Length: 332
Ligand code: UT7
Image (cartoon, rainbow, N blue to C red; front, side):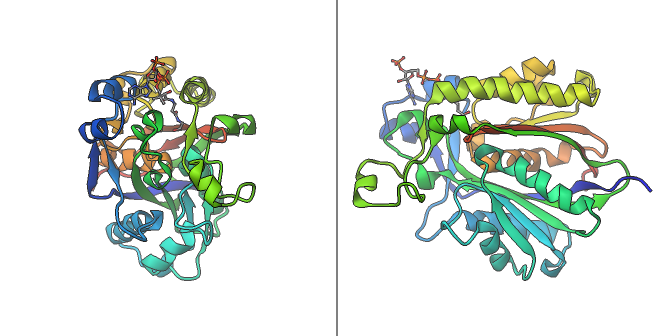
């Protein structure tokens, strides 16, 4: 029998209505549309507004639409993994809340915290469950409400990030489609360049931590940029080479959308053309775990069964990696 692989068999997404433009940011911090566009490639980002509206609101909307689109009943879902660093609360997991909001009862569900690599780490994890043959239908969600930990007085970070989520259905396939290979890595020494200091067990919330603005993302942009360019390109090239994929045999690179210059550097090292790269950073900015599923959703109609696709990400931790998969279906 052919090997069981985990294949993406459907995709949906959810982005909030409110759009924060560069022009609006120009009124909030000392920045310009020209600087943001030329240094990052972001034109606008979506922001989830409203009291009590957490990441699970977007995750649940994506999952509800995914169940409808794939004609799946909630009780068929056996596993739901959510990649996020902005769960509604420290616990329970966003995955638990998403299941609750979408009528999925009794499934195995949990979160994966791997910052911007959250979606690919979660996808790899879910794939292993599917490959055992025991799990037939799994959902992987990737998404973040980055606005919940953004300091809108810090011009270096607030211009990059936005909110959004996507969800994919994973099912077993034996026709050669699905996840084929992965290179996933972490290096905890990178923690000092990208983190949110307070609110965890080391520095629980106090009046002082709030005053010191420690409940916001702290990023040393240049250091993160250098590591991102090198590591995202290294793993993307490594996975191409060890699977004997020539640049013209790759249908799509789906890179994490953190900065247009990181995306371009990765594509350049892989020797591929811009037309082979999914890019939507202009519309959404960096939605952390949301970027890769949002790209797949936006480009779904252009994907064909058998397409060679590489997903690639880099994020806080540091975490990074690449996944090679063959797309499982033609546009419907
Ligand atoms: O998602 C996972 C991980 N995150 C990333 O991959 C992000 C990686 N880092 C980056 O994308 C970039 O480092 C940033 C976009 C964050 C910053 O871009 P940069 O080209 O590295 O800028 P910089 O920090 O070197 O700053 C250059 C100049 C500075 O001014 P001076 O010192 O040269 O006068 C900054 O103060 O640009 C200034 N600057 C700004 N100016 C206008 C920084 N942010 C802004 C801004 N508007 N928003």
